[in-house]
Image 1 (cartoon, rainbow, N blue to C red):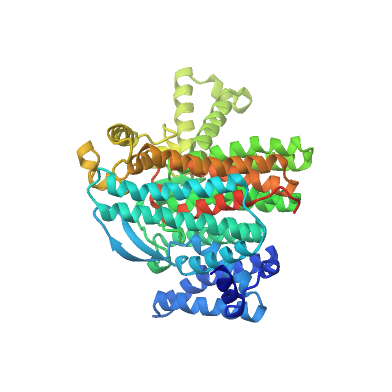
Image 2: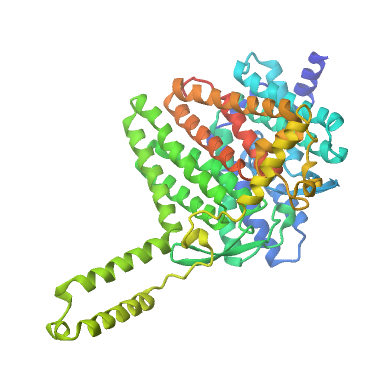
Length: 550
C-alpha cells in the first residue's frame, strides 16, 4: 500500500523528495510578500473602487498569485509560503452553528492545509529524518488532548453535543497545523516559515492603520474583517484616539492582531541583530507594532507586551553566555528602547503634565525671573497673581487632549472595572473543575450555562487554562500543558546548544510564546482560530529546529 501511494505521488503528481531543496528563505520572502500585497492592498483597493464582490476579488488574487509563481518558477515555495500567510487571515465561511457562541467555519487556509499536509507526510515517509523525542511528545500529547476533548463530549456534563464536537474538531485542526509546520521546517529551514508569518502580520498592521484612519472596518468580512466595536477615547502620545476592535487588519479584531503581534515582535527583534542597521529597522517595526497594541486598548495585551520584552532582555543573556557580546548589547539596547518608546507614548499626558508643573514651579521660585517692582508688591497680591498666571499658562500652553479613559492618562494605570466579573468566572471554573474533574462540561458549553454562575449570558471564561479545565476536565488540561511545555523545553534546549542564528531565533520564539500565554491568561484567545493556529504553527517551528549550524 505504501509503495503504491509513493508511486502515485511520483508518477501522477510529480512529487519528488528532492523538491524541498528548491525551497529557500529568499524565495519564501518574495512569494509571501507578493501574496500579502495582493490580499492586503489589491483586494481592498479594488473593492472600494469597483462593484466587484470580495469573494471574486479574492479568487482573482489567487489566480494572479498562481501566475506569478508559474512565471517565476516558484510554485512549491509559493504554496508553502501561502500556507503560513493564510494562517493569519480570519477569512472564513460559516458552516454550522450551535447553542452559545460556538461556530464551525471553513477557513481559507483549510483549502491548502490538507494538500500540503499530505505532501509533507509523503516526504516524511520517504526520508530517514525523524522528529526529536520532545517533538514527538508535543505532537502526541496534543493528539491525546484532541481525543480527550471528543471523549468529554460524550461523558461531560454539558448540554450541547454540537458545541462540544465543534470544539473537538478545532483541536484536531490545531494538531494538523502543528504537524504541518513541524514537517515543513524539518525539510526546509526555519526562515521559510518565519518570513511569511512576519510579512503577513506586517501587512495586517499596515492595514490596521488604514482602518484607524477610516474609523471603522471597510466591510471585507470575507477576508477577515469582523468587529467594528468602539471602546472609548484614549490618548497615544499627544493625540486623542477612538479605540476599538476595528483595527485588526484581516486577523479578525484588534485583540487578535495584538496576539499575533505579541507572537512575532520578539522574533523580529531577535532576527534583526545581525547589524545595527537591521537592528534600527527592527526597533522601528517593533515600535510601530507597539502602537497598535496601545490602539487596541487592552490591558491584557499591553501587559503581555511589556512582560515579553522584559523577558526577551533576560533571554539575551544567553547570547552573552555564548560570547557574542555585540549581539547581546544590540538586543538589550533595541528591546529596551522599544519598551521606553511605548511607555512614553502611553503615559504622555501624565509625563507632560508633570513636566509643565515642574517648569512653572521653577519659574515661580527663581528670583531671576521676577522683577524688583514685582517683589515690592504685596506678598498676598503677588502670590495670588502668580498662581493665577501659572494656572492660565498651564491651561493655555497645553495642547495635549485630556483622556476620557483612566487607562491612559488618569489616576489608574490599569483598568480594574472588569476584574470582578473575571474573578467570578475563575471561581466558577474552579468549582466546575472540582465537580466534574474527569471530563468537565465538554467544549464550548460554559457560555451556555454562564447565567447559572452569575456570569452574563454567552460570556466565555477569560482564561485559556481554566477554560480547558472546564471543557475537558483535569486530564485534558494536563495534556494541553504537557504539549506546550514540551515545545517550550525543546526551544530552551535549542537556545543553549544551537548555532548563533538558531539561538537567536529560539530566544525570539520563546519570548513570543511566553507573551502569548500571558495574554491568554486574561483573554479568550483560545476561542479564536486565527490566533491559535498561528500559535501552534510557532510551536511547530520551535520543535522542528535542530542544533546544526545554519
